[in-house]
Image (tube, rainbow, N blue to C red; front, side, top):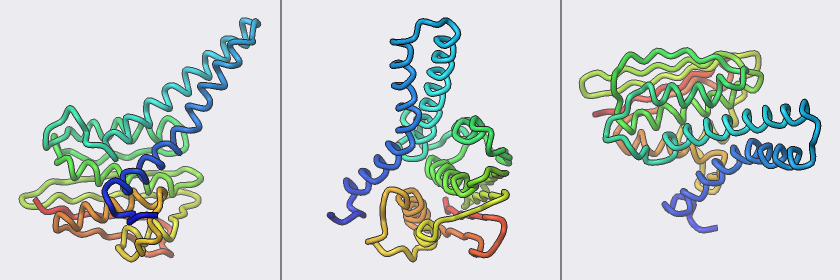
Length: 215
């Protein structure tokens, strides 16, 4: 494998994560279409249509999220309305019924960098709520700095040690993979801007991430 921090190689890791998340809903679309082709019973055809609708919404929600979290957020300038991030996060997690989202962002606009960091921290924390729970997200822009806080709490909170290491800056380059790419990117973006990342201790029952971004 080439250097995983190379821009092209790193982009491929993010693409692998995106494809992994889309595999299930897109596969369900294909299954629904195959069932529709062979089904003649009206009730069963309606069930197939419901399946297709659910899968299409899930796919669209994930694409909207990853467009902002991994992409360049085309269509926006240097600043992004936080409402766009909220809609993306709620589509990613709330639609499943497992996770409730608490939104504590009053800013009308946030920098594109801050939104990308917020989304990826929310993704990592939401994935750690393996049995669902509460995902709280806050951000505040003050003169010279933007502060971001993400808090996850639930019956079972599991943060992969490699993800923790990537956020903390202790993951060796050899440990960089598609599942750790988002955490690595957050760390690189924040420290590259002269900021800092903070996270709760491994034994804490509540998962807490913090990011301080100058500018």
